[in-house]
Image 1 (cartoon, helix red, strand yellow):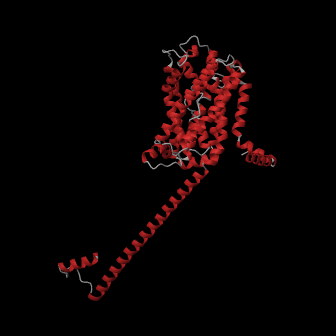
Image 2: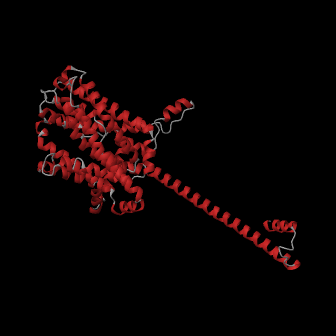
Length: 463
């Protein structure tokens, strides 16, 4: 094992030394998303008033609503309606993705948060630990996982359906899960939601308003335009590579999020120990969720059982690679968009919770967002190579079906041509025979013919 690792390290170092400036440039181009994301965060740190909510450009409208709406408008333009409807009927993906996204992830976030709570470390802020539970109970992101699934050549139509389902369930499931986890111990203190916490109406209003304006309306408009101008839309999308713009809009969303965070000074109030704990736990949990999803969706792919009932139960968790990529981007992702509405819904009626405490609770959500974007961007190229063989099989199968269809059409044309030639030759033969008979016996008038002769002549003409 050590010899193999040493050989791999030697080959990697040899390949690294051979790289030219063009290779480094191509590497930078491949990771352009992370580079520009870092630049956006730097700008947010230097000029937080520019992109914060309520700032110079009113980012709460110009970014928070417009950018996600443009992302889903592009999805509506480029997505086949039949594929979208077919993905909406994939109930197995719905069950696996939603159960893992809400129950599995929130349970593990609670375990890590509860362990930090029981450690009684004075350097760890209680509000940040509570933010871990809040993070685990939020739904999947609205825009980023759709973008990354499409870039990784996964089933982004299924991702779009899961995003919609998860965010529709969030006003009911998220507050219930948070209340259940935070009432598990008295040490949560003031962070324990009161039984009569108000503000849920504002939460419902915020969630459904955001879904309507950023998901449903732009997606519907994009699908309508595609229905009437499909050829023009396909040409435009291929010519100008409009899918790349979704990544740009995603960077703008993160820029606005960090601008608001730097403006409130939430990071300044957090201790270095707390920030390090959040970063390490976020990274570990993200990769744990990703590998657990791969294990659930692909672990039993080659397993077959003689018992048909057992095989059917295990087969429930067998997915192809494109569907697996969609689930892998849905399950680990958590949206920052519902952080503030959830906090307001749970703690608006609690006067002991200060604005600073509320801001501290958002730190895990914001840091997790930047980490999941980095990890998701890095995994795109890996997933793309992984799914290449399945895409090739689908392409060859589609070409074979098209070839069979063309052969059937040619065969039908030949058959129709032969039948028409046979009919025309029969007609020509019968008319020629009548001409011969007329030449031999003459052409009697209708008045000279008897009724029987007319019937015979008509019968012969029909034949």
